[in-house]
Amino acid sequence: MTEVLGLDGGGTKTIAVVARQDASIAQVVRGGGINPFDGDAWIGRFSELLGRIRKPVAAAALGLPGYGEDVRLTAMQDARVMDLPHGLATTVNDVELACFGAFAGGAGILLLAGTGSMAWRRGVDGQSARVGGWGSLFGDEGSAYWIGRQALALLSRGLDRRANVPARDMMALLGLLGGRAGDEPARVLLGWYASLTAPRQQVARLAEGIDGLARQGHITARDLMDAAAEQLATHLRVLMAEQSMPWSYGGSVFRSIGVRDRLENEFGPAVPPRLPPVGGGVLKAALSAGWVVDDPWIERLSGNLAAEGII
Image 1 (cartoon, helix red, strand yellow):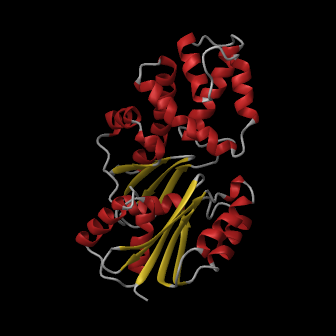
Image 2 (tube, rainbow, N blue to C red):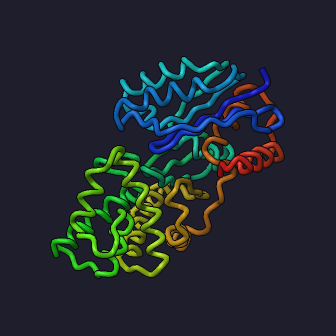
Image 3 (cartoon, one colour):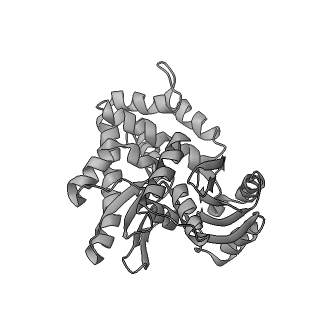
């Protein structure tokens, strides 16, 4: 077998990549979120995605959301991995895999802010430490879900005058929910709420629109994105205080130039990720398979993933 598999699972989406020994891409498989903390629907999604992988591979490395955080759920994840046509399989937390990819196996701190949020440090000795990642119920500060929820809470307070939100900003936020001029604001908000089928993911999707409003000069949206950046900064402060080292980023929130600028002003320039999370899986699997991997190989893999729209 001359192919390996990397898989990056998340709360909103999952992607698997089968790569050849020359770092070319043999197969890309995409699916929905597989976070076991979001309910049992992940089981079917995960099994269906694994079933689309065409043939056995020499080695596999999977980053799974919530892996290692609960004994029962981790055992369920391990059972699903056994369905995979693989040789040697390595399973780790999804943020650990993202950190491995960002620094191509080297030392550094990855700050991840997608649907959820967490910071992961890989030391020069290979030892790991993490901050955050406690989930949407009482954590994930600065994440896309957190931004969306903060916006919805502020919108509701503005509607009944518990908060002073400029009318222009209120209309803009309602617009993200499908509201139009002349619509009754409370009906827009509650109608959107009633239509939710995947609440965590749909709330998280609001963050991109909120960042867009911030770029257009909406004060409320700008304040929300600034607050998210401050929450994410607390993650880095803890890990940097213990051991200063390069930092990188991942996740949809870092599409926001404002968030990245705010963090770089405090912690210095971020190191662009050398590989996306699923690329970290391919790299880890390649090493497990005993392949010769060097910097040119990593660069070829990065370019081939980018050509598939994976960055």
